[in-house]
Amino acid sequence: MQIVLGNRDHPEYGAATIPFPIPREEYDHCIKLLAALEIGNAARRDCQVLEVSGPWPALKRLEDSEVNLDELDYLAKRLDSFDTTEVAQYQAMAEKLNLRGMTDLINLTFCCQQATVVTDFSNLEAIGRTHYMNLHGGCASMGELENLDGYETALLLIDSGAGTVTRYGVVYDNGMRLEQLYDGKHLPEYHYEPDLLTVALSSKQEPRNMEHVTWLYLLAARGKIERAMLRSGIPDPEDMRFRFENSSFPAEINAALDFRQESIYELNDLALAVSRLSMEAQKKLGVVVEMAEPESASQIRHLAENLDQFEFVPEVRTPAEYGRYMIQESGHFDYDDNLKDFYDYEKYGLQRMEQETGMLTDKGYISYYGALSLEELMMEDPAEAYRQEQGVQLGGMA
Image (cartoon, rainbow, N blue to C red; front, side):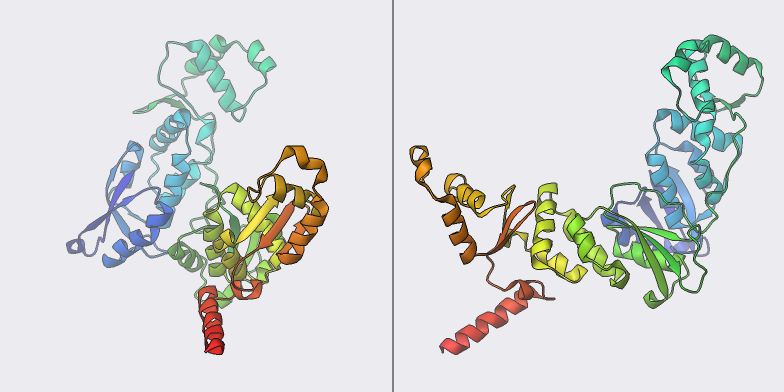
């Protein structure tokens, strides 16, 4: 969906075409485009909708109104998850109720599934089954459906005369109520795509109330974090109260972090580093964290960014298993199966472990072979630490 936005007070400034939902990597750029037009306030509806194009003709009713960018992005994300049936339900009910405000259009996404929309009257049995499902929250047991007379159910629906003809089909609201889940400020929790950390933001100046929080999903664009704070009425990060609801970080990271003491920006940077790792690499990072014992999000991020300096051998829990892995599978030796009874795997495993910076864990063996110490690697700038170390060594040699 493409929406053209402008400044109602200054049409001479031009317009910006924004894609919705806004891709995370384009979010900050879109904010800059709107800032050049002197619109895009985090908390106000100051973007005039000049044109809506795409698969949601019902949203053309927003044209010439003023909207808030993040509300519009939230609505687009909700709609992007809808299936074909929900698309018809949403658009038909938006027309039936003549909804034009962003608050109502967002709230409709949570209840439009209760309505029944008929676009083809040729199969009454299917209409009756669909209607029954809509009346029961979208689900029914196989027994209920087998005993249901869909034809009769459809006739009763049609004969009720409660249908309203719309451009999207004949809609029956089934007593649907437009509940106010969105209050016009605090967008309800909604996970549009997989996230690593869910954070509930609120101002310390307001009472603790989980109904009045701004949800933030990390990894997020930096501008998204700043705007979430402003939307919550938080002018200063020191005035921010946040609580962590869900974490998809490896368990070892969750155990190492004191989330209450961390900067939201450091946590977001950590989320970025972890998101770039495969699931196997994330598992490896968890073991590295157990070994290195970092104390902050930034230290864990440095470990994630230097994961190639660690070797992880899963399922190895004893020196003998490590010795067997090194001799048989690592590729460092020409293994001869005829001599397998003559290898002292435990002795070789212990010897290797004494030479390496490594440890056995319940997930496997982890070892570090980087040039810096682990403490230096986790410093704010490990590359600078390495240059300093090399400088000291060269100076000593000279």
